[in-house]
Length: 331
Image (cartoon, rainbow, N blue to C red):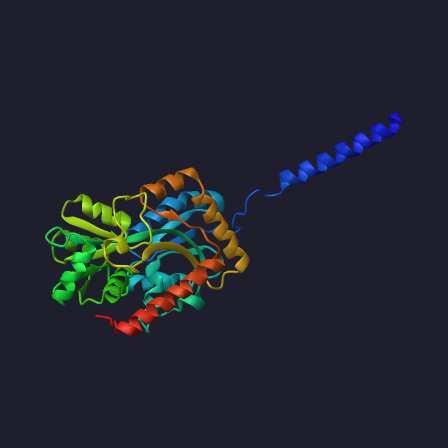
């Protein structure tokens, strides 16, 4: 009897030991397994200092720790993001060259037929990192106190108001065009070479209005030379709770946001793309990143490559239809 009990106990102990060894040897999280030790390059297709650049530099140190290789940020501005986008589209599919892009990557195909890359066939969607709603802001000299009043003025004075953007084909340009189409008004678009020049323009009164991401808009309002009228989102945000939605302010149906996401070369194996997505998701789940994102008004996403690709396809369709119906052209 004792022998049987001892054998049973020994068998149980052996099973538990094997299970423990298996548990300890199995990875607890999926981290991208890169094939070489060469550095990873995060291509930012905009000048230093913008939101995409800030995000890239925030995640780069943690990516380096997880990838076990150096991670460098490489700013490649120009052609509305097209130069940087093409660099990644033509890169090897080894996961060592990644793109930190903005929502503008889905507006470019709708407006330009001469792009040197195809977003949907040359780039692999990895994950949408963060999103944030856009805000309609006006220069302090504009008399309209609500979005409804602004629209009424625009209808009574077609072509008198001007709206700036960070460039033709940019997401801020298309956000403005969507406002014009939704409201049925004639407002003159004035493109600038980047976000910073457009901010300087509205603060200086060169243009009457902008449609810009919420974190940028709040900084503009803090200058006392710009006033916020409405949030282009279905509901208010805790980041700026006093700001009404476009529907509340007089323009139902006007909803458009800004987002930033990760892309790789389309030659990258799907399994590696998924691992890279999981690595970014882990970083975004860390308390430090969550607190940083909240301070800037970001909503963290971290969706799957499949979901990201599907939403991108819908956005391209949406903007292509906007261009067709409203006959938007490159200035």
